[in-house]
Image (cartoon, rainbow, N blue to C red):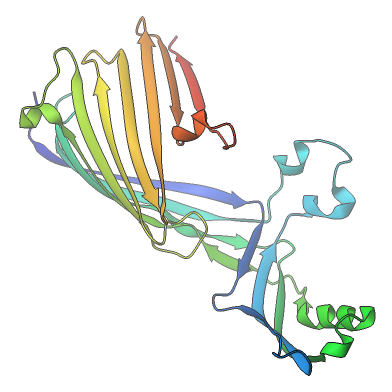
Length: 277
């Protein structure tokens, strides 16, 4: 049975470290203009700013000779602070279960301040090259040197945002609308996520997900099938879990169900075993 409607709130704070960073200013351009018909000159243009940072462990003089996990073990070029905040509204019982829920949250609010090997490369160049010299080695090297821009190695700190994302989600126990399956619990859930910063990891064009779950009320078995779409790419997700003797919990999941059955695809799967002592 459900309890009285309640609004729950949560706040999490975290300390984060970044291994390396590269960022190109929006609107940066690279262009090549060949004349037609052939003859005359070609135009090569570059207008960009690239910020990057990397740990000292990435220095060529420190790289291991073979395979080694030490390269990333202590590597860090920056650190910062982050926060997650969220609210959930539902009719929760004493076990914090609710037949329906609605939630909204913002994750990864914060920043990383990069302080190691923080270099900036910039270029604002337009070259006019005679087509008769395009194949000349010295000419090509000169063009590449000019287009590579200027490197500022003053190591001034650079601050970047975390992939801040807004999440809006809801879930419903289907028995609330008269859909039941004897001996099981059926549910559906949906989420929409939208990136709030232009950082890799934030779904700036939006991401939508929908899933259905089936479980036994005792909690000893559950299975879920989901659908996600982002940036024109869609996929199926799948998860299954068991509880043995109320002590051993076994879970398996994949974010690419269809790829598991394709020989040319990259596969991913997660397995988890927990034992309560």
